[in-house]
Image: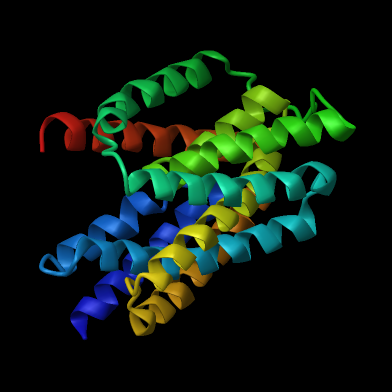
Length: 253
């Protein structure tokens, strides 16, 4: 009973953070591994996706109701994110992501420093492209980050946010809204694969999903109320935590 309560609380907190800027996997997945140390890792990862996908989808819905979403660009990007996620998961069955695991903290550090120095980055919503060009650019982001999510995963939401801000000229609020939609697609793709392989504890996933939606609702309301400046600072905090966690896992674990 206590184990379910602990991971449900972790799922709620993960949904809260994930709804604002991504990075909920920093909270929920380690909690599952800590509470169930003897469980098969694939089952814990599949159950994590089974819980997290609901909060991410709910956040995407909430953002879509309050933020002007460029559907002409995001719908093709969703399709490309699905394709990329399946491709990454397939590659993971063939090769090890060890090299990427060691490179990740350095990539995140570059993003952190760049965002810190560019104080006006993502404060104004000024899309660089329109029409088909915007769709192609968003699709490229969906394919690349979707592939990364299927192959490795940590920091997927943060990569989506950064690339939409830096590459497409979105502010942090619009970038977070777009990231939620695409991250839902990559989560669905991964969940389908884990489910097909029998690696989802569905009863646990439903409990985690309910808690995740509650946290997601609170996080989305805060982001919409306080705007891009608030999302930017949460982004910085999450990327900073990702740097520390990924560096520890790559070099000190």
